Length: 212
Image (cartoon, rainbow, N blue to C red; front, side, top):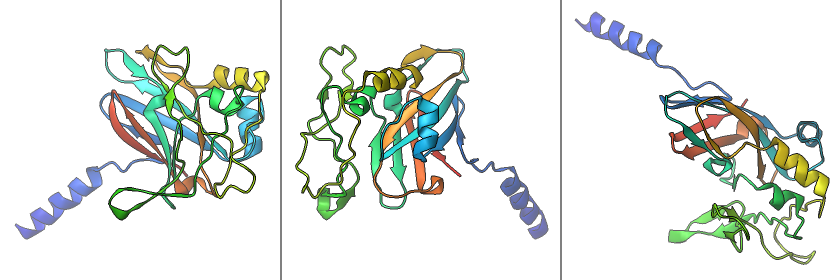
């Protein structure tokens, strides 16, 4: 009897599927992603230079049901497992910066219950003017050079960069078929792919993707 239980436990363990790097999925959706950290690699993927401090994920979303799935960049967040730093997916206008906005990821900010929140604090979060979708446009006033916050400076006012980012980003749409595109993030510090996780939280549930 004891031997039988051991064999059953071993069979159950063997049947468990461990999540594969660069992949995540459930009964409603499959995700496959590639993380880009190197600035030159990002430039080749986008077709323009974003500047320092950006991370890009090439994501493929595969719906698995007969119902259309709403896909949006807003479903994704990139997190550093080293210090908890996190970034929502950025809009192209936040990077190309035609309005003169600068994203300032703060190193540390006080959180609730005596905790410390690591990562970007998106100041002045308001719906983008002219947007009927109510998406959030994150930014903060430009700080002086002696600001204690680490700044991610953007190539200001570059129409070519804005067009390239829009053309390559993951489309916001309802779909029954696989879609693919780029997601843009800003994280502070030197990170390797193994230090980063992509969180999906959307209509198909919540998933975590690790990278290698």
